[in-house]
Length: 113
Length: 116
Image 1: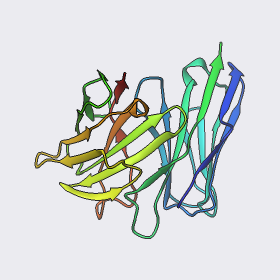
Image 2: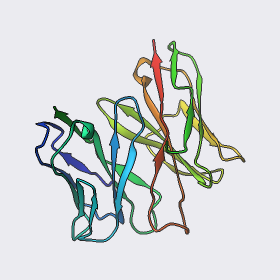
Image 3: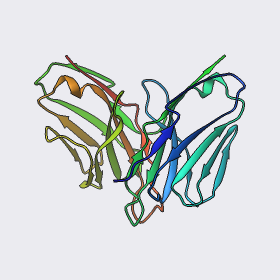
Image 4: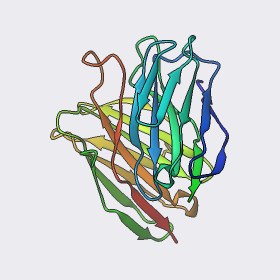
């Protein structure tokens, strides 16, 4: 069974601060996706990384896939209240089972003005 | 807007009852996934259909069933409802299989089920 652990579980920071959240596993994934979910809404896909060591930037958000494709991080620079939400990572299965995504339990981020 | 639609938005019912949740995938997506999200369990995968056929099963109870119709919309049927079935139920869709090297799923807005 593939498991993804996210840390921290909760994070409360002030506007303008930087932060990093982590997504770790002992399993290898064919891809790693990050989603953001706001209360009462469905998760929204932010990015997909597929190559070990890959780094992708989305404005103030930087995503990195670990070299061994077992872990990933999300770094937010100068956080804003609009970044508040639940951040979920999801790993794609390997060995031809790429249809299956395994989700972590998420990091609940609160950015205070 | 992800392009995935779900109805109803909210559903309140009593224990022992049966309900049906409906999902329409994004145009062109052949796969539909159902998830249950509760505060303590996070996002739990229930079941996947691909072009009308069941592809994968997750933590789906025997009281729950799903199907995907020829027009690719899907329904999740929940029966003999219990208090613990109260949760958010999400549908997601994707292009999957030989056309995609990886599986990006696009989620609908969810159905909030409350069992009283």
